[in-house]
Length: 396
Image (cartoon, rainbow, N blue to C red; front, top):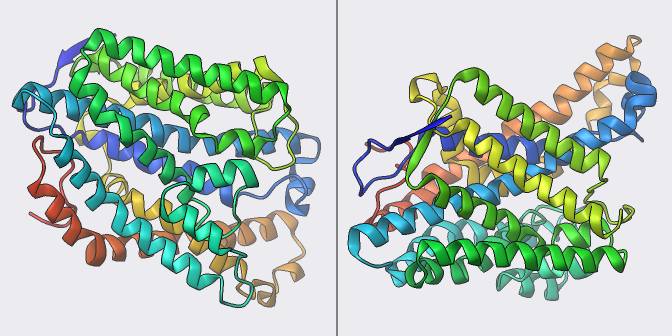
């Protein structure tokens, strides 16, 4: 593997292949929340004794969220380092303006819609305290201490982890050189591992560990370390090696999920301190391998629809639980699927309704939100950009 210097101007950093990584991360999270589990009759009938392995693969899809974190840290670090080189320093105020304009409008819209859904029939149970904590980006700590919420606003806890990362990201790039940044990332990983050792020793459940900001920060450290090591360059590697890296990512994640039993469920068994440390290290390593596998891929090889979905991926992530919840409450049983005698055909049709339908609805909601709600804020954000990054979809 060799590294080549990015040919784009120093005041511009946009790599469409990372939009494809975004949509992969979303699709994995979507599968984690929509795939049936071994208790489902369809899975028991088709897979029988292999149902636990299917559960592990489905759980491994949840590491798409870790991929989001790693990618976010990589991009933020790269943009801030380029800004420091171009402008002589990091504009912290401008950084926070850009982040607020990108995240807060859609975040608070989703929070309001989630509160409204709680008043509908079969709506989720949300307390005033829950709303207050999510309103000030403490949803991760609420989820870690008291369990993850069930309902449309449940994905928002991870946004609070991102916001906590933003509290220190511009400052460390502004005042630390590259050598100190390496030590800073090492310190984050050590703190995360020490915390995982503690959580393993007290037998904390899976959701308590998964929603913990200190645990997830090691993915941010992995993204920063990748950025520092690449030094603005992109890998120049053959397609077959990229496929091997992707396979390596899958091996890392499945080993973490199946071999070391890293799970997100409330009642999941705690595998112990060292399996937790090793498992989450494998998760971060898998994220880095997948990023390297895509960095430097020629735009001509990337499908335009995947790039577009990557550009609206924030909305996809925010709205997918809304769509899944809506489809779950549709009277699909009235369609008579249970009367179809051929079980594989019945499984195929029911999977189409429970997976394809909410996925299509999610894409529709995200596209409308991006076009009519997010775009005005993105245009304002663009005025505060020092390094030009992702273009606004649908605009010249």
